[in-house]
Image 1 (spheres, one colour):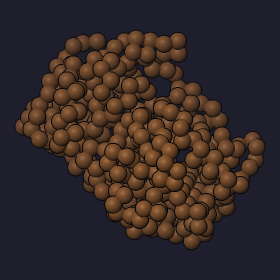
Image 2: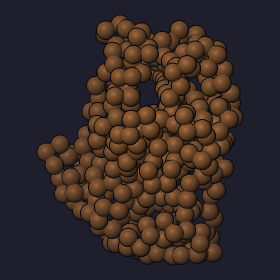
Image 3: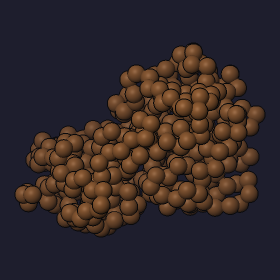
Image 4: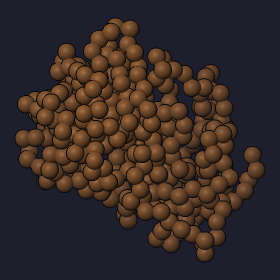
Amino acid sequence: MGLDEIGLYLENGLQIKGTAFGAKKVAKGELVFSTAMNGYPEALTDPSYKGQILVLTQPHIGNYGVPKPHKDHGILANFESEHIMVEGLVISQLTFGSKWNSAMTLDEWLKKEGVPGIFGVDTRMLVKMIRDRGSMNAVLGDVSKNDLEFEDYTKINFVEQVSTKQPIIYQNKNKRKRIVVVDFGIKHGILAELYGLGYTLIRVPYSYTADKIMEYEPAGIVLSNGPGNPLLLDMQTKTFSDLLEYKMPMLGICLGHQIAMRALGYRISKMKFGHRAINKAVVDMHNGKAYITTHNHGYAVYASDMPKKEIWFMDPDDKTVEGTYYPDKKLMTTQFHPESRPGTNDTKFVFAMFKKWVG
């Protein structure tokens, strides 16, 4: 690997030099960070990171290589999507370690996927700056200061870039009822958990109306995670409102939670730097229990903006609403990812609760 210098340019004027790896190209996106200490293959393939340049705080990245994709029933078991979704990667030290199931190095993987990276960066300084000033747009690559153009992350609909274009059916041999998954950028870890409940899954494009969804005669509906600004998804918000009329069991996860909350009339706010980690605490407001969960979101509803009785989970640090529960509507939502791949299994009971409603 050649040791070429490359630049990371932030919209606040900061310029950082480091060493290039991965693809030789220019990337633009919102600069965000994750504090996860493991799981970089899952993080890089999470569609919720579409449009973002990711800073990983773990000092050594790449130390167990990259596995060969493996599928069970058409669902990836070791990645969250078929391709890398981040626009670029920023790390402190690049390593070339391996593991028994490693098929290539991180550098080789990024080259293959056409994604640029930079290492030799003081990521601790970078993360402290993001925490102080907030997430900001950035450019990664070999570009002069005079040619810099920053894209406004908040004005781009990234969901349309990651949602399936045609329905995908995951037929379950148990021939149980069908669940429709509205794909805003679904993680395969979530698909695997839903499939494991014993249902046939019908994964549909995010643009489907309530009428088209109901043509499948589902026993339940899941609104998936996904990237970008929920305030751009007016049609999807209306679709959710229409679906409520059917009294159908529904589960909203991450972006799906935000769309549900927006449809119910609650304010969605852009967070200063978001939650991106696999060790974020949430508190069950019904029983006081705390759980460790996986997060990847830059927008949220705050507890101060909705009635306390409607809040299921809450983040104890910044009081973001991390889940809601409406038994009369047969609706439950989580802002976090209840399957946590990678991460803990603390909140898989959410899927079991949904199954009880679906039957």
